Amino acid sequence: MVSEWGGAPCEGDSLVEAALKVLMCSKVELKAEYTNKTVALWRSGNMAVLPPGGKLPIPVPERPAREDDKVTIVQPGRAPKRGKGGSLASRQAIVHSLVHIESWAVDLSWDIIVRYTDVHPMPRDFYDDFVTVAEDECRHYLLLKKRLQEMGSHYGAFPVHDGLWESAMNTSDSLAARLAVEHCTHEARGLDVLPMTIDKFRKNKDLETATLLETTVYPEEVPSIQNEPWAIEARKYEKVQEWFQTLCAPPYFWGKLKGPFNMEARMKAGFTEEWFMPLVEVPSDKKGVEAAEKLVESNEQAVEASA
Image 1 (spheres, rainbow, N blue to C red):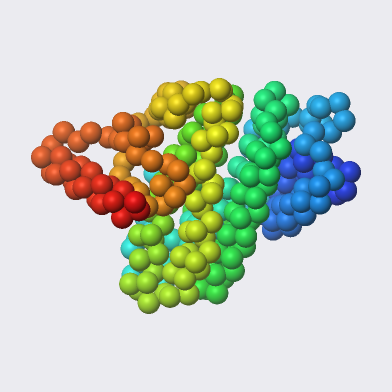
Image 2: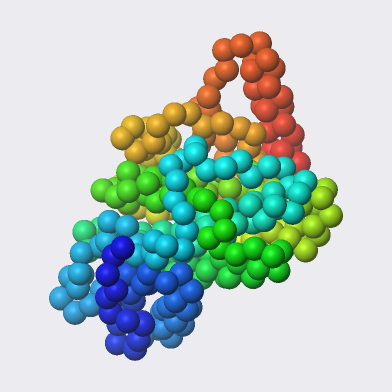
């Protein structure tokens, strides 16, 4: 476990100092409190991005501090199946997974602010955007954790994996790669699957969880992948293909993208199909080809519907 550093964010802190305090806090509940405090300080307009001298007070942690005894971490692929929501235990497991994802999304938002700022400073609007993302993810975490408790469970009741953070570490040397892989690939995948998750809860009469996801979490996930301008700024690429398709490849990303895709939500985020369709896995068997044809057809319908 990473040792504590710095206490709570306070007046006089720069943004990166406050963000480091969030990352170095091992208690998840305090991370949420520190996040909301940092958001308020930043929004006051009196907070600089970097401290005097422009240097970080401590190195960026390889992994945010976490209480190791609270949540059981397993390797990706070894976490128990969560099921289709037909039982209470299955629905608890699904919500628990979302709580974990949102909790780590908070740390990821602060990490992108801290990790690259001293070597790759960005416009103030960039920090505005990611402070807002941290605020949204924190709100989602708190709402979903509360809902999980109302369902008779708690954060830590199920094993989880740290695939999101492992992916973040693969992009630790490139801001453009972090934006492409974490925010425009993994976050976009969340937009693809969340409607199906909502449908699971609705079909199984858990309307409270379905409503929370549909009216609060889902709409606020779209801005988190609207990062084309920042990725272009980060490496001065002129076209989407030049940064996204180049960076969604080893050593930053392995494998192909898989559908189905939520084209309506992706297009709201400006994430049109010329970004990602060239990276989609091409099936070799007849059944796979038929599925791919249906995917293309559904994508075309989504384009027409949004026109």
